[in-house]
Image (cartoon, rainbow, N blue to C red):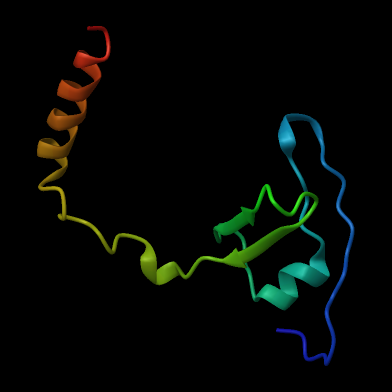
Length: 86
């Protein structure tokens, strides 16, 4: 993590398919690493402004089993998808 007393600013160009490369200074400031998930938040009432935060890795798998077993969940999804054509 970077130790600084002020905000860190960096530019990134939006590429084809809405891809960006997160600048190294921002990655360091977030304490992010490859395969981390970044959450972006934008408010239409504030055009041109977005916030990004690092999602804690502890969330991964934290809801396992909440919706039953994997097989039960997949069966439920299949039933739901089958109703879409109605």
